[in-house]
Image 1 (cartoon, rainbow, N blue to C red):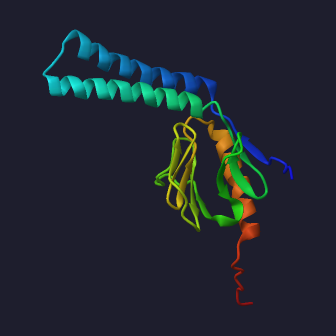
Image 2: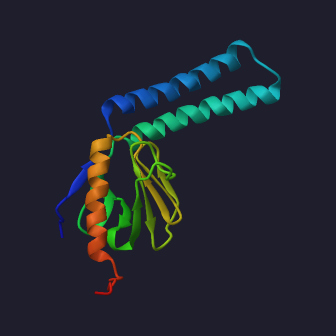
Length: 164
């Protein structure tokens, strides 16, 4: 059954190029230092590992930011269909200044823990916490988080009765 997409987050092309470019420059500089001025063998291994790891991270970021994030009435997922979180499983959305969240993003707290996952520049999951954002535009991310907050109130199992 196909569901309507309520909101979409797409990484900004300028941020994508800038982020991947910066990581590539750092990796290149580290490897340049390792080749032109070879230090002791242990430091050489360290520099090669850091340079290679930085290029690997740049590659992963380039792959991850080619995708998008979509919100439907029942789930938050990537554009390729990978499930990030079910709306009924989300307890809270935190957009606060002091929240441990990605740049231009928000933090979700889910009821159930899931496998740790990470798409650099787009989203990450550590147990019950999901961070969405990074190389995304602030306006798109804020809109998606507001629509998600409205959906969560519909799925909220606790109805509070206030005294009259």
